[in-house]
Length: 419
Picture 1 (tube, rainbow, N blue to C red):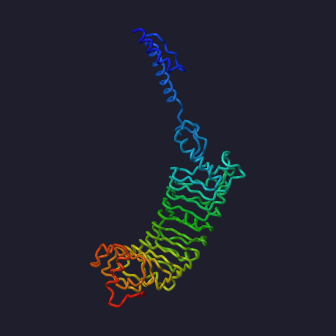
Picture 2 (picture 1 turned 90 degrees about the vertical axis):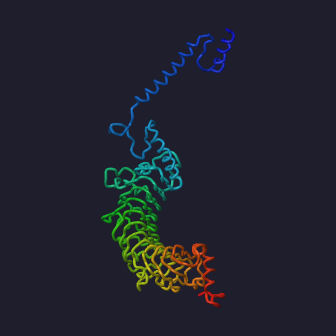
Picture 3 (picture 1 turned 45 degrees about the horizontal axis):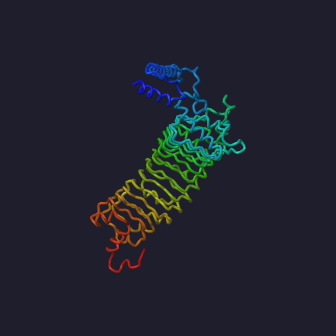
């Protein structure tokens, strides 16, 4: 029995040579004391951690770090978890000029970005490049806070956004909670792309838009999915604008001055409450989206309306009951989207020359068989109250529908014939 006890005492001693010595005695009291000491050590450590000071930000005397700075207490795991990837992204931007801080749940724009020249790690100062692209999309920003760095204030010795972003070409702020924009934006003389869609911008006094329109270098401007309302103001300085997106606001009209943007190629004014159109003289416009408005489609046929390069037009959900001969007005037009209207009759002359025609969800009772001779590459007419053809043909492929229409042509018509 004594030999067996000694054997059991040797086993833990062999497995713990570098730790506490284990007695070879048959008594278990030393082991119990060691366990009690270990539990006491753990309890003391927990008590010390609970007694450590917590920086909750309520007391101004506590060392709370500035938002976005790198001076973060090591005890604050949440901030440390956020700041490390932010630091990496800023360091990377010093090398390629492209800063991506999107999707980081930021509530304020990081001050560290404005102080990035002071970051010692990363490329050497002579290898650093200017920022040309900033992507701060899909955060929780309400105000960029850049105006507080105006050079006339006492913060003049700090880096100014005008200096940090002097070479900026693209600024993407979509998907935030912005309710205002910095007044210094026109100082960014190289800014060509500005995306402020899906924010909370209202601009009751037109201060925001009038300020944005002073950015003379803008080529792409996305204002979609905001809370703008009333007449759309004149585009004062955006003479080189090529792409303007006004989708999903509450604009009631467009200004005639928009024709001053002679470089404009794409205009999306869909899902507003436009009731009329000005005379548009846009020599380079190729794509026009007027869907989900209350405009009269015949306004497009007005004598002063000039869009000679227009190739795609969307007038869906405009409550129109007919189609005017749009291809005769716009000879380059090849795509016409007019779904979910009230069109009852389709005149073949109103769609001649088109390649894509979408008339889903109208009130068409029949289709002219001559449609099969127009060379349409895509014809969509599902959701109309037609008795013929069968639904699987009506909502099937364009090729199958064209074959059905050809079968309804008079004898001798359609043999190697298009018109």
